Image (cartoon, rainbow, N blue to C red; front, side, top):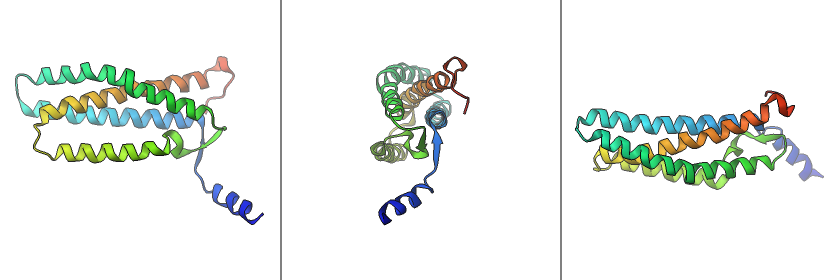
Amino acid sequence: MKHEEAKHGIHKFKPSVSKPWLYRIAGLLWTFVGVLLCTLAFVWLINAHHSQDIVFALLGIAIAIPVGRFGFSRLAQKNIARLNSFGDQICVFAFQAWKSYLIILIMITLGTTLRHSGIPKEYLAIAYISIGGGLLFASFRYYARIKALTSPRNGMPND
């Protein structure tokens, strides 16, 4: 009995939100990070003042399309399916699986390491545009899910 009481005591401090809000948070974060990475890359290319910078940008965009479609979109769909299996109120940090937080930490560390390495920024721009564009592309999966959940024809309220 004491264990159950303690459990309820802890859970009342857990920040919970409705599913539409969780999809909004996930979509906005994926959009923000995607735009941030692409902005960094484009600033590097603008500051490089090389004639082939457009080639680096186009290559990054060309790679971003399959990265978004076959990589990040599938991950977003898995997150959406996982979230669909939860109840109405979900912990605000559940927009990603817990193991994904470790992957995010590794990606941030790798990105920081690469940014401070001796690799020319024009080449890093390709990777940053690829990943950033892929995240941006895949973020629309979350927005589509929000629209489906909050559509008046579904009888769901707008949260």
